[in-house]
Amino acid sequence: MCCGSGGRPPGRGRRGSSGSAATTRRSSTACTGLRTRTSPSAAPPLDDAEAVEILGFALRLGRALFLAGAETRRIESSVVAVTAAWGMGSQEVDINARSIQVQYAPEGRRPVVMLKVMGSEDSRDLDRLAALERLTTRAASGRLAREAAAGALDGIEAGTSRWPWWFGLGGGAVLAAMLCVLASGTVRAALVSPLVFLLADRGAWALSRGGLPSFFVTVAQTVLLLVAVTGLTAAGGLSHAEAASVIAANVILLLPIFTIISLTEDAIDGFRSMAAGRAVSLLAFFTALGCGFLAVGFLLRGADADARSTALVPLPVVLSLLTSAIGALGNTVFMGGGLRIVPPAVATAVLGAGVKLACLDAFGWSAPLATGLATVAMGLAAAVLSPRTGVPVRAFVIPGIAGGVLPGPDLYRSLLQWLLHVEGAGAYLVSTMASVAAIGIGVVFGTLLGTGAERRWRYRAPGPGPVRGRPSRTPGETVPVAGGPERDAGAR
Image (cartoon, rainbow, N blue to C red; front, side, top):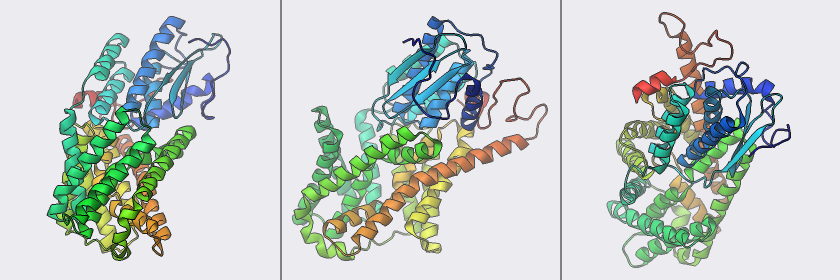
């Protein structure tokens, strides 16, 4: 739609007028490795029809990136880079919890403002995310015309998932079994855990199909999980320790990992409205989880003695790393990742699990500190290797977090002890929540360190002619600092 006023839409304060847009655009594209050859100050104004076409594509691209699981900063920089590459010299972008809005306002012209609702924040499709980032890189580098880019985006949006739904669900079942083993579960418990996962997942799917709000779906999943496991325990199918490991594994699978990490990223990067929206979603999730425990608390009274003295026996280091690797494999499939994403995801999971084990066992550090350092290492490795592999940073990190660093057993035990009014349960729950928060902080900090290391390496890289990664001498041109389009296109 077109707007007759010259004011900018409400949004983030740092988004200035067209005079400061070029500076923001240069920094946004630089931090993500995107490149545009269009000089904002020299670009002639576009007519309204052409502006609407470009902004329409940019909005579709931003929404698709959001639904595939991209971070907010990546969405913003992609929209800015693509529109600048196609001749827009004065645009502003506003992303909030429900929508993305762009404005094109050349000096002396009526601004063009367009908006698109983005949808659910829980979506994730790693293979589609990788395809969208390849498309963004090619479009921002000027290697893809608008018609071809629109056709490519149509193909990505219309394409089916990498795996059939049942195969992806099988990946989740493998992850449930491996998480159970990591929680000191026996072979019997590891066989039961996938069945409980399938029951809870299919039950949630049926309820959501009926239009039930996600809050009550989470409550129902928690109740199904607890009722199924306590029923098996009462029938003699599981011991109390095995039941604890099965519940802990499936509680991990309920956690909204994307929301946890994205909330921290958005808060640090200055996307306040997005962070606030995710914080509300996370609060609603933990409230629903607590309600699920409270709803069937009477079934857990018999676990009082176990809850007071639960001490899960750690696995041998080699078995822990192997289990983390298999869990990351299953989680990659569960999140729609293709075969190309599996090796880096598995390697990152093993790295994170190894660092956490070293911090806990060798140095005796606290769980929140160990979790934070493990995710710093994961984020750093992902940021350094992503430009060289063509795999998005999130595809490196997200699959391995559940298997390697999430405090699933601690979360289960702290909730159970809180429910049973065990002394010290509140402090235990706070410590567990600190470990959960450390995941997002560690990933963000590690990614920043990795991006800085990649930038410094490129600045110092030897070779004839201008060093890749240094600012161009052409006014208004932005060059890549981490994984330029030529490298990405060649790798793919």
